[in-house]
Length: 298
Image (cartoon, rainbow, N blue to C red):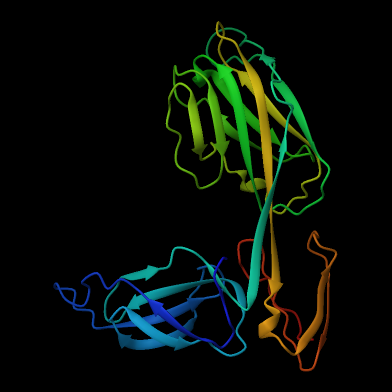
């Protein structure tokens, strides 16, 4: 979340009325609701029955802090609503960083031809990228550069170092086009076939299967040719590992000092250490902004 709001601050929220106060819709009032779990629920009412005039100055609740927030503008006495497109945080700093790990350039690894006929794959060509850094994965992106005629023949799979988690980023997409050079990212646009097929596209199967896993170890790419007569090469590939760090916006928590979480990264078991002048309630959120069920106040 690039937008960080202060706990208890006065903020101006705006929305596009878009004629909903007239034109037969005639919504004169709206409710302004806050979600603190990335839009799963909107259970905090910031303003009720406020005029549908496109702007409202609201004081955020005292003591409410969350890293993944959204706002809903809900029509009163009607059935439509609008939710802001990007998350923001209240009292937290959310930072995402990505590190790219690449194979050697110009691998020129031959992709064995299919065994004969459609759907009879040849032996896969595989290559390994070793990631030495141990991080808890928020999300990854994968680049694949393959020279091959009739790219519909190909299946490309990425395999986690644990050997049990894998996903297929290219699954016999397109048709008789030549060559692919794609950055695969969850949520990107659907593949646009061309020669070459290049750009940033959504994978055939989600890369989110790797979220929450440790990044370190030998990552494997596997490319198979599922028809005979046309051959090609795996030129190179890379993985970008993205991690998210959530920390208190300490200016808003003046009663707290020496705040730390360790080990960081971790696999779900960690220790929170701080000095506080008052009772403190600890909330824990997962990578998608969902709050983990609460334990006891400390």
